[in-house]
Length: 231
Image 1: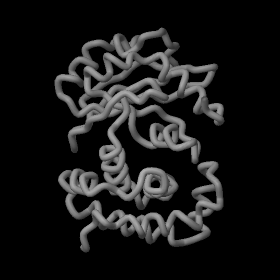
Image 2: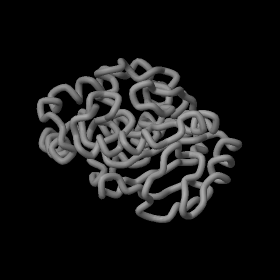
Image 3: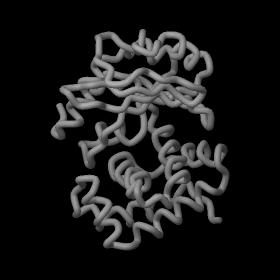
């Protein structure tokens, strides 16, 4: 199903989750790993992140877990590598798959309302494309200047644009509703950062990406401004 060994581990973990329960809770697979798995594994991603913006849904998720179990989130048993921890911000643990600890997290999303549906290939609920884009815009605003993040959010946006088309106006609107014009400012600053060819090449190399993408990524991002306003 997937070429990269760690992605096969993630797929195995996803197959252990109860899609119906997660969908009923409004809990959706999102973030970089979901995007990467849906778009031909263009880079390596290591964590499993779900998002839930429903207060009732997050309550149900909190009520089903214990320190030693993910409860009704699972349809098949898994081996926990660490106790399950939960607070107002999310539910976190590590699951051991083929001897490797995989980080698993459910984020309580309080910035925007998210929605989605079950992806037939992945077998779990995933964020809608609009929300995938909106979450990436928010993530970029949070950490565009952190070089240890390897500009992964704006790079992910470029690959999403390549496969799915321009960033929808609805995604810009949702992200701006949460963060205002800082979304636009961060987008432009992130583009400025990857304008350095040596830096962009290093980011792609560290994320095990095709180096030939370095030529396309800046153009894709500069061309995807239909939903952007001038700042």
